[in-house]
Length: 177
Length: 177
Image 1 (cartoon, one colour):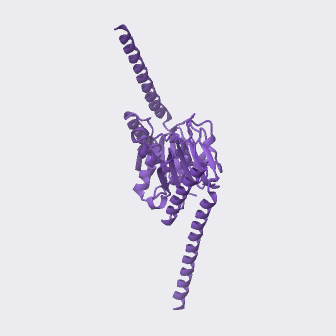
Image 2 (cartoon, helix red, strand yellow; image 1 turned 45 degrees about the vertical axis):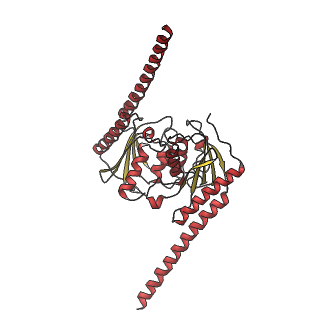
Image 3 (cartoon, chains in turn red, purple; image 1 turned 90 degrees about the vertical axis):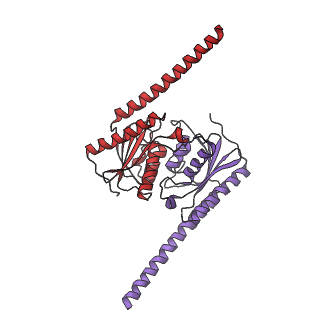
């Protein structure tokens, strides 16, 4: 059985705050705001924020970038005795990467009803057929994660609406000339 | 509905041969021999071979490396109208990455009963709840893929056996002195 780190509730809150800060950073550069942190021995060893659009890479999700960084930091693909914090439920790719990296413990915020592979659509972390299982805590600071996502998509919709309105007025002007 | 490329059986055989060559290359540097190729408009746009041990990265699977390379090559995370060839059934991480990259067509060789997410343990490419489905052909040159894997693991077992034998003889020598 893999060793599972023990974290106090203060530590959990602190590390999820860092993941939320990473998410916010993603939102500020126009990415869907999702952030992740990997912790070992009570220390942050890697962070990641969603960079899909800026990198134009399908795999540039917060969790995968954090895993790559942690692998480099520790010099091994095995992230034993670590914990990963992420603001949104991992997708199939990221949940698979967490399993492949042997991360024993995951805390996540909001659930992803459309693509979540840990509790929403699949439950891959508890799959006994795989060679690794992951202890999981769901809903850590979920409201803050949801608020970030809601504000981000609201802003996008407002921008699209304003663009549409501007195009409409431009058309009206052109017709009146 | 996403556009799905049309490939002749000659093309399928040709591209899978390239994936097998990539797998062989992995085996030659001590990695589990798995290879992948991504094709667009009848041309190879990216290749990948398993590099987990040499990179010490949990995500350095053949498919993921090929996807990253194809993203860079095309300058977009959307690999529309492409086909991915891989010698072994993708795991959860790689199947998820294929979905995230919107690859519409996958050909794979051998099945992976322990970790395969496409037909063995899961069937994620046909999951209608996700926002992308993948047309899949299973068992393309599977025997050659299996032979590569079998030879690789046989060689590892032989090396381990020889090592054990040498240690035993060393011990015997030390005791006889």
